[in-house]
Image (cartoon, rainbow, N blue to C red):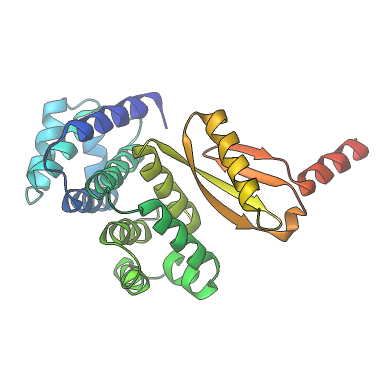
Length: 262
């Protein structure tokens, strides 16, 4: 994300923190707005056009999205008034604020854990992964699959987020979409998401030690998702955002092969 977009997003996060009356519906409206903006190249260009004044861009939001609630209108107007590095990053920003709004409104729900569960379900079912990730399937059809999947075990908050993601992938795979949303929700709560890949499940003591190490390293409590992959042979691979700590045997063997080949 460009520097202008990072500043604009930080402004949007601060505005959300100060906003009153934010509800699940506020987040859903922002996510719907993100899809609408993404679906119109003209609207994307206008809302991210630096030659238009901030008041003009904010007023455009009022005209186009007049049916939004007061909180969503104010937040979206503020995002449009900010300067973004590109139209695509404006869409990303509206999406993130929408997800953060849902997280802020639904603090009693463990959205991160539910997103982890959805990711595991998708990764373990090729047909489900295809149904949610296919470029050929209609967005509404994919949303219906999500409704059926989460009808019994998913909260309204998680369902709203996943419904949006499958309708607006924007070139991202379903696993990356879910991990990205989980990271946003975790960050909103002052934590972080760590994906840990191991050859065999860790013991409770090993998990506690790993969590303690990650907390010290990143100065935040980690929400850990454990993945089992026999191909790593042994050791642990940890991914936190763009940071990868690879202590697996497979990685060490690969490094050794490269040194021997060189």
